[in-house]
Every structure is written in C-alpha cells, then in structure tokens.
Amino acid sequence: MDLGLKNKNALVTGGSQGIGLAIAKALAEEGCNVAIGARGRERLEQAAADLRQFGVKAVAISTDFMTEAGCRNFVDSAVAALGGCDILVNNVGGAVPGAFATFSAEKWQEIVDINLMSYVYTTKFAVPHLKKSKAGRILNISGMSGRLVSPGAYSTTLTNAAIVGFTKLTANDLAPFNVLVNSLSPGTTNTESSGPRAERMATLRGTTVEQVRKSIAAMSLLNRLAEPEEMGWIAAFLVSEKNSYMTGTTVESGGGRDKVPGLS
Image (cartoon, rainbow, N blue to C red; front, side):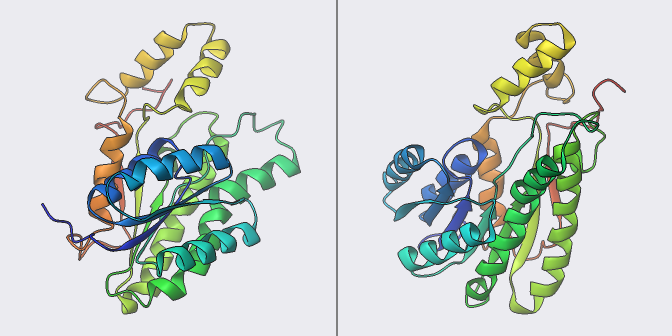
C-alpha cells in the first residue's frame, strides 16, 4: 500500500536507536525524508547513513532535548536541512531509575524535562511549519503505563498520562489546519534499553533476566515482546495520508496486554 509519504519531510526525536529509529526506517522505506535527533553524535550519524540507503535525504542533528533551546535547535536545523516539516514524531525519554520516596526535586525536574517538556517544546517550534503542510501530522510516543497501573513506574506513568492529555489538546487546536495529532502507546518492546531494565528488575526480584522477560511477555495475549519494526509500521500509517480521520486518539499496541504486573 502506498501511504502517500514519498517526498514528505519528517522530524523524529530520539531517532538514533530503538523505536525511534524503527519509525524513521519505516518512513524512509516509504520515501519520506527524515531528520533524526538525539544527543550521541556517532550513533546518529550511523543511523542517518542507514536511512540514506532507502534513497531519501536523512540528516543527523545532535541536540539536548532536555532544554527548550535544544528542542528549537533540532526543529530549526531539521527544517533548514530538509526544506520543511510535514511530520513530527516525539519519541525521546524513558524510565528513570529510582523510587517515589527518594526522587529529589532535581530528579523530578529531569524526568519532566525529558519525558514531557521535550514533547511540548519540540511541538511548539514545529507547529508553524506543520501548518504550512497540506497534511501535517504529529505522533507522540507514550506508553501503556499512562493507562495501566505499573507499580513503581512513577517516572513514566505520570508523564505518559500527561502526553495523552497533551495529544488531545493539540489535536483540538490544530484541527482547523488539518494537522492530525495522535499518540502511540507501545507495549514492552525488544529494544537495546529493555536489557538494562530487565537486569534491574531481576536484581530487585532476586531472579534471572530471562525469568523477568518471560513474565513481561506473559502479560500480553501474544506471549512475547514487541519488535521495534512492528511499532514503526503502525507509526508510518498514523502519520500518513491514509490516516485522514483519526486525531486526538491514543493507539495501544501491546499484544493485547491488559494486565497489571503483580496485581493480575
């Protein structure tokens, strides 16, 4: 199916690895030019080189999404390099180790800055460009902890729930400009970062990493973790012209997961 993405310009934050890179690759396969942003220059450059193999323009922009200035730098640099912005995918952030009782004020600020405000600021600077597009799209990658109770997951649950609300508000504001805004909530995905998380959980539970991974997989009806490219394919549809009537919606892709670890 032709998704109508050829020659569109997409900005993907956190695009050097994991789900972000999988989304960038899915877009590039459809002929979409892509700008990817993250902090690590070396991985960004390698990821951009991989994307160029699809015959599209791909640029790597090293920036710090924890600051408003860093978010603006990414958008301005990406638009200058690609010649415009039709699609924005907000994807940076993740779980921050720690416990509710021990998070300092500085740690809470870090959590909010990377997991929520990076979305707010990047969207803020991308909107003027998206309004010029005939089919502007924003996709916010959140997480199922925004709806399901995940005991102890304060750093992601609070911000994921906020991302869902942010998605609805911006969808309302941008509907008159035909800019569609949606959120994608992946289930636990087999990314590089999932390894260290499983190791920390295994240590806390006094068990093995393999047992942790099996218990997480068992929370889905499909009894397995998702692969990054599976999230990429869904994302490509959501930001495409084939999705012309879905906005303000959170799409969950958790393999049928509706279980709470430790409570069900």
